[in-house]
Length: 614
Ligand code: ADP
Image (cartoon, rainbow, N blue to C red; front, side, top):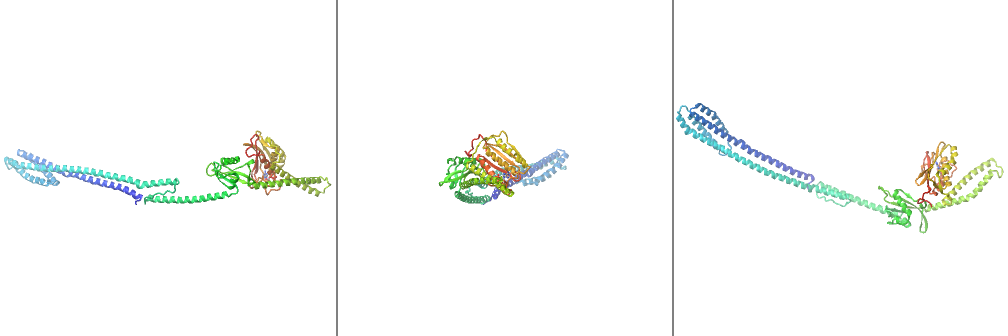
């Protein structure tokens, strides 16, 4: 089997061979043509000239003889002397240039006759003889010899002319034959070239095209394709390598598919056995896969559409997560959903998590329903205990404080300085206990909804100003600059001014407490969409990052700080109040640089947002 190199060599080699044959043939033909022409020009033409010269010289010599007979002996002798050597030279040329058959004899005859002519000429020129005798010799010998020599020379001339004509005809024949042969060779060459072009297509290009087509197929994903190797040349090797590659790819795909299927099965298995209610929903809203709990509690079975389940809040969560591309938690009254599972009351906190791939839009949403029943029960229990204990402690604590106050006022008799000191410490502690109990009772009242809220449209500037004024002198005493920035054009907010005032007071009090003299506390308010945000920022010690989301928890105090008058309830109460208003509260802080507490309240005149308490 031939390789591409051999095939190309064969094709080009054939063409080269034809070029060489045509070339060598042309050279041979031109040489033989040249030779024929050379024969004509060189050999025959020379004999023709020699014959004519002999004839001319002879005629002049004859003229010389006649002059002699007519009495002009000198002129006659002169002519003969001039032409005799010319004849001999021409004769010599002719004798050396014999080319035609019979020419040798004719030339020999001329030579013999001329020898006799010279003898006869001498007789005619002999001055010793009489004119009559010389005239008789002329007519008897010289003139017949003159005639014969002329005839012989003519013969030579004719022979050579004849030969010239024949040579010419031969040259023409050779030229015609050469032309024919050339045409034939050219046709052969063209044929071989044509074959070469055709074979290039069949031998080289077709397998390459086949390979290109196969690659196209593979690109489209048809890995089962096998390319026919067909030949054992380079293309054949390429096809084999290609088949091996396709087979490796097939194996790779098979392995991958098996692995993917295994992973998919195990993921589904694990997913289904999750205790929480979780469902994966495609962008159209159809459930793709769900846990047992999601199917039983919320009806989220595969193929079911979220929109068809009749839970407006669920569709809302799904739509928002799909649109925003970020995690969405349920808010307000829907923050916790109550459902009965096997006749038991359960609480779930819904959350929608978008599935983000490389694409711009989420490729689905995961609905997660965290079972917060236990947490709610514990909170309830804790609230109950705190509320009960606070109530139970309040009455005895009141009489205790009263007793301590009465004793300190010496209503029950004079006190020794030591007794006064001890009673003063007891008063301080009982005051702090009283404040803690009040805070706890406040919290449980707000949480249980028993706290009477007087929510109404209120100007933010007024609420803020009242609190800032209250702290003016405290700030001055501490050497801290207290500023306020509330634009007049701010819209009114929905707030219980006493409660929100309490929140602002708590934030300002904390800020002053944690800011060293020379620092600054600024209170401001600004419009924030359909909300108004209130900010209390300070340049104080700040809150370490790990505690940022803990400061709003009950009884939390940043560790490592000297125990102040607080009991870790101020921010917890603030959050309860703000959330009871349907607002949010948060903090950002950098240790050593300061903290910024911000809470948001709804603007008056806004319709209640979905999720806010009625
Ligand atoms: P307390 O009444 O004990 O201050 P809070 O609930 O008001 O309790 O605050 C919780 C914790 O947050 C406090 O222990 C305090 O260290 C920290 N904190 C509150 N406000 C600030 C602030 N402006 N700068 C630094 N730390 C603060």
